[in-house]
Length: 329
Ligand code: ADP
Ligand code: MG
Figure (cartoon, helix red, strand yellow):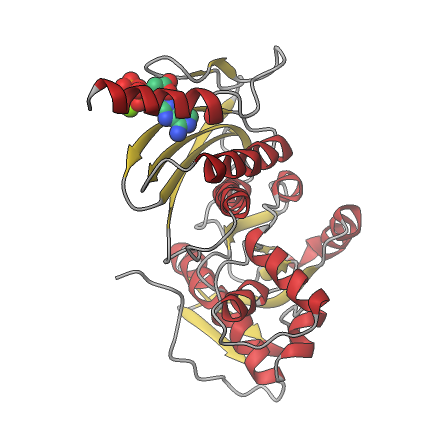
């Protein structure tokens, strides 16, 4: 890279990314942030480092016309959701950014969204890489989890119940709306769906409680059938869920016929709710967490010896479904 370009690159970093939530207090894990060859993080005693990386590509994961702050908030939430799924707490993140051009207005708005989301999850930006290319945002999140207590996908036992947080299918409906496949005229419904797509909330705080209850967990990024399939396969079990018990938001029920709403809830991605297994004896404790966090926790089925995921309708008949989750290749 020649001087002129590298000056521009460093100016971008300094102006927009060097002070996204600077580490403030002594308890913070960040020993060294943006500016050196590496950042330095201290992992708390008796904890393990949890690491996850996600890439968002323009026109694949978000529309090109999306507001930069929305893209940034969504990128952070999607990444933090993986930490939540393990029961980890965010420590810090790094970001690789490819930009087609230097657009100061876009960068200012993107940086503002990033600052807001980083503040929300108390997760400083400690480094990254900035290059020219099609708009692509890669975030790597670093979290900590008490040693040996992470919620893995492979920990479920036969007889465990299957639970899911929040509601399912909203983000898929939002994407259909954004891509003009689903007409939504009511501004409140539009706003609700926009939120669910661009501002999913990683369930970090609840996940800290779930660690002592859940036998296995995953976040729903590719669709319930696909993600529950990962959990049940990793645990060597079969999952049976009931379509009648799937948590559907009011808006989804207003906008779609029941069958279609169920289909969105089963196969639509991007909801970033947690799906987890737990012994049925924990039902009452989970109900108390649901009221503490003001977030529905719904029992949708159970795990047994065998393999695969099946969904039963209200009369106990098996719903035949071809599609699983979103796959890139
Ligand atoms: P190097 O040549 O050592 O890879 P860079 O020139 O890529 O360093 O980056 C200089 C500093 O700026 C490093 O500390 C790096 O982590 C940080 N940085 C680069 N791009 C970003 C970004 N998009 N967000 C945050 N920090 C960044
Ligand atoms: Mg670099």
